[in-house]
Each structure stands twice: as C-alpha cells, then as structure tokens.
Length: 351
Image (cartoon, rainbow, N blue to C red; front, side, top):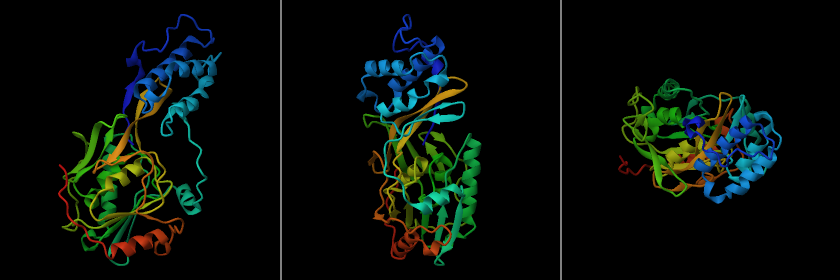
C-alpha cells in the first residue's frame, strides 16, 4: 500500500451543497467536515463513477441528522465506504479507524491466525541444506529513515545464511497482513533482482506510477525510497528460483510484494488465495484528529496483469501450516519439492 497525505483544507469551499439551509439540523462545523469527506471521496474514490452522488449526499445527511459533533457522525463512514465498495479504505478519528468489510466466509486457518497473534518478525533459515527461507512480516513506517532501517535489517538477515551457497529461496508472505511495501521490497532486492516490478493504474486503467528496483534500491517513479545499493554480502551471480507462500491473511503491502514477484522468471506461488486488498490508498487529513484513507488506484504486475482482488497461488494448498517446525509444513515441503527441480530462464528486465 502507498500513502500520500493531502490537506483537505486545500479543497477550500468544495462542498457538494450550499450551506444556507440546514434542514438536517447538523452543526455547521460538523456539516463542513462531512462535506469535505464527501468531496474527497467524490474526487478520488475508485468507484466514484458508480455512485449517484446527490442520493448519497442526501442519505449521509439523513444518517447524520441532528449531529452536533464529529463523534456523532461515525456510523456514516462505514456506510460511505460500503456504497463505494471500498473495503481497503477507512476514516480515522482520535486514533481509531472506521471502515467497511464485505461479508466473507470465516477464515478457518487456525495456524495462521494463531501465528499472527504472536506478532511475528523476520525469520531466515536454511532448509534441506541448500535452500533459503525468509519470512517477511508486516512492516510499518513513518519516514524514509524507517524504510532504510527495516530494509537494512532484512538484508542483514539474508546475509547471515551465506546466500551465495544456496540454490533457491522460499519467500514466506503468509503472516504479512500489510503495512508499507517499501522496506519489504528494498530488503528483498537481492532475491528479486533489478527491473520493473509493478505499478498503479487509475479507474480507467491508465498507468499512474511504477515501482522498480535499480541497483538494489527501490524507486517509485523517480522517487528513491532506499539507499542500500547492491547486497553487502556475496550473492549468487545468477537469478535463483523463488517459491512464494501465500495465505488468506496476506494482504495490502504483503500483496504488493507478491504482485512484484508475479511474472518473475523461475517463480512459483504456493498456498491460499490472498486476502484481496490489492488497491493503493491515499491519505487525506481532515483535521488534527481525523482523516480519510481512500482506495484510489489498482495494482498491476510487471506483465501488465491487473489485480482486481486476490493474488492466486499456482499450487493451491489448504492447511498444513506449521510455523514452529518448517520441515513439517505442507506448503514449505511443496515449495522445496519444486525448488529441487526448478530452473530460471533468464529474461531481460525492463528498465
């Protein structure tokens, strides 16, 4: 997921209606806050053209009837996101988030749910004596310094297993439920390889941004997000096969990492379909205590394939996860079986 912060104040008086008459008896400041929210959603939401805005505005005012505080309008926001079919966005107020989730079948993978409760970190191992394993969890950032620090820590973890001697890798994204894509991709750069990884497109399908690795560092268009350079430890001279593990809790930035590996030569996906939060969000500040995060773009991989919802595995495997003993993990074992025979057919990376 990417985020951009924009002050709603820049919208000035971009209200959807004039505020002379207020039959809904909403406090002026509260109504202004609602109008700013509606204006931002109308301008930026992915599904903005699928909504009758006059009807939606009237419904929002009715739901907020008599509201004298922003607190009183909180039930409006899940309704707004539902009408826009935005299950990735949210309204934040005083440190809490209010969004909408579509009805889903209950997620039944107890091993994944239990492991996520433990707040897992990066884990690197050597399996079968010649294959690397790296677990990439959720990563949160507040600054470019955070990107650099976390990406470097991930790189350092890879170096501890002497990667030049290994013949392939398992990248485990099963416990990656989001955060920021930047330190994950920058840290994994020696395994992924330079070149175009993916991009964002607007609702019409027009490309808006691309992300790529260049010289071991991550760029989104021309903005450089890391300054690590090539690997600081010896790496294999040729690209190696990579197996990617997914779960139904691989989400958001975790899905960006998965998408970044789609289309890579010598790469295969194992496990469950991902969660399905494959949109890019932009953040908009409404006040010192409130803001909107809106899904504004969809994601494509290096081949141009558009991801409307989930990232799918090449080899579906339900259950059998064992995060304590990887040798007994069904998905790890399937990945190892493939890695023993896998080869990478080189392709010229896009600049």
